[in-house]
Image (cartoon, rainbow, N blue to C red; front, side, top):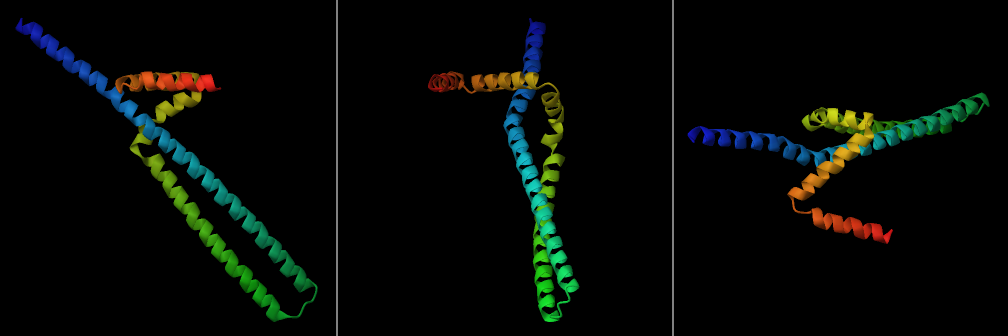
Length: 168
């Protein structure tokens, strides 16, 4: 009888240990989704910064060409040229400094996310999701179902889904 109690106690302890990682993993999915959204947003901002930098560089090259044409045309008004050059130089320096600072901030934020423990831990899940999207979608739906069941939200979620389908 004592032996049976010990067996029951050890089995219940093992089942609690098995259930814990699944709940921890379910808690990590919303954080992972937020992190992935942040990465996508930061990558988009980084591309925007790069495009703006390229546009400014083209503008500066055009201004340099105009200045070279003015020199070739023999304009002798050096004061006008100096003012133009100083203005273009200061504008260029400000824009370049601003864009470089923003680019560095975005790269630091992206590196911070990529270096985080949750990002590293979820790398295999992301790999499976990219390699097998149907499996990832089914797993995500199953985890949502389990999470909603644990939080007693399943019935209200199903009702909302049915209402949404009837409207469409």
